[in-house]
Amino acid sequence: MGIKGLTALLSEHAPDSIKEHEIKTLFGRKVAIDASMTIYQFLIAVRQRDGEMLTNNAGETTSHLMGFFYRTIRIVENGIKPAYVFDGKPPEMKQGVLSKRYEKRAEAKEEGEEAKEVGTVEDMDKFSRRTVKVTREHNEECRRLLKLMGIPVIVAPSEAAAQCAELARGGRVYAVGSEDMDTLTFSAPILFRHLTFSEAKKQPISEINLQAALDGLDMNMSQFIDLCILLGCDYLEPIKGVGPKSALKLIREHGGLKGVIKHLRGKSAEKAAAAPSDEEEVGDPLAPTSDAEKPSDDEDDDDEPKPKPKPKKKGKGKGKGGITVPEEWPWEGAKKVFQKPDVTPADEIELEWTNPDVDGLVQFLVTEKGFNEERVRRGADKLFA
Image (cartoon, rainbow, N blue to C red; front, top):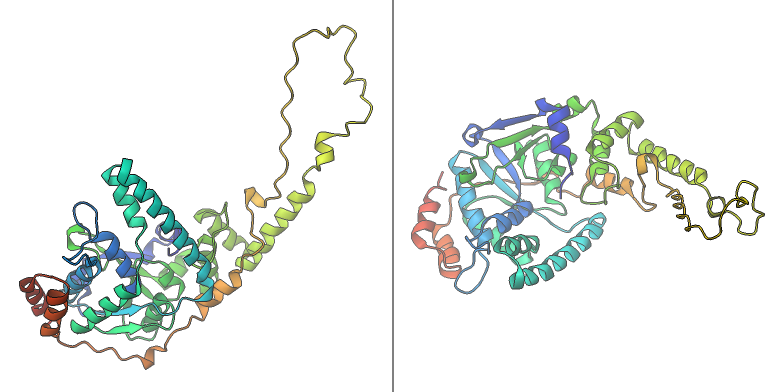
């Protein structure tokens, strides 16, 4: 999911933190790429004209392999040295989000089946993309492919984004390549976006500098992490009613999430105390009618009935501006994951780029997966140093 609305905030409040480059200007740079995010990206984007994922004659999905093979070749051709980092075990904080993703995929699958019966091609394509799930087999096949291509592969203890950030902080690579902005929340000094996009999109590489972002937002790293959590991250559901602008305003006014939560819950308590009770709203039905409420002698009992007054709305006990902070919202745990993630120290990781194993690539991609041999050999030739 990344961090909701962070790109727009940086564009407005820290524009100097974002620069665009042509891919050829990154010649000589080493980049740690979030492979788990990239697999998902390829399964979504690399498709047939009818919107279905690429498959071989045996019906096996090959979109991820096609994407990794040709997009990595493009990166290498432009003088960049990529190292791919795969997810390990997800942190416990992420289990709730993963469960909800599973539920959404199940819903999308049902809706997709209905679309096949009565929907349009566009509907079918939309629901098909929403059902995409990266499997263990996808991961294993991509790791095998990259090793045959001579590209370094790292399996993180936990989050790939955190491990990528560790490699960049430790000076083993210049930047992290990912579409997820939470890489910055893990303290990656430089983030490259759109690095693995197809050449046909002609999308420039977006470089985001963390220190320039902090300077533009006038925040320290702790406050930036708090802002990202408040915007919405992979570990917590966002607080309803808090958008990007209000999140930035709240962090600036209260110095961090601790102050923000205290403020919002205080406002919520005040509104709950000020809200009228049921008795105050409805009144005592047994109380004597006041003179003002008694019908006058001039009133005709046969007159048309008067419309009933609309009942007053009860206070909902929400905080400032209708914001409600969930009772169970463990932001401290999420912050700990960002500040002290489970990673392998950068100085313990060896990154080595080698020449491709052409025969191995032909065996895997051509013999086992049905790729065109001429194209595979031609692509492999571009990987030689």
